[in-house]
Image (tube, rainbow, N blue to C red; front, side, top):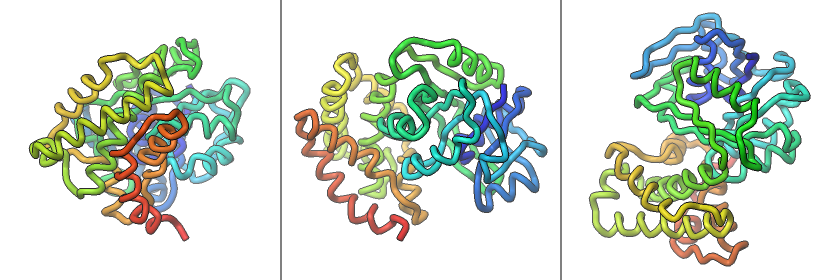
Length: 308
């Protein structure tokens, strides 16, 4: 397959690198020092699933140089969805599939408004990692799941083709015939953990180990699920239990990437996590008192980090 990774940071670099290892024609689209390092030294992956060095992997800052591709892994930050969507248009052929991997539940629709909904396949990435240094991806736990499927349900041949490629690459694709349910399931836990760890500046361990904060976190997940069920009535009844079991399984040192962004002075995805949850709750008549407090408390912090 001919594959482009739009936003080849930690997630994009990892999946793109693994696909290139498996022999697919991959181009990483990045910027800044990371792009410079990719061009000079190639891509390095440090992972419990096996280290890799791809010294000749294609990398560019200009999607217009790539030409039409079969698949685009769309892994930019939420704040960049519209601009990046316009930038990838030269890579779109009539059958090009664009898999979104943003946090939250609205990116796939926003991207579809830019490039046409027929191209867009919603996805959910579950993989811990970060850019250890320019050109180097640190994958920090042995799971590397990418779940995706057609927005209107079902599993299409184009999704099956990508899943086969990801399997050959040694990663863990999950074809989902109700991807929006999976998207919302992740969102309920992620919106809670992102707001709570960013507001407190704490890892997950202390928040779970303190009775008062543990109860608040559980209640916030339940509140998010009430919104999810209003938007997606088919949400399974055991969703909260599954989310809580997952949060319980995470190591004590885990925290949301939004806390890392805050520490590094980068824009926060606050509006696409807590913000969207509160707005969707209001639209569907579901009260969100906990997440409304989270949102209001984080908003001045997030606004101060926006580009001026």
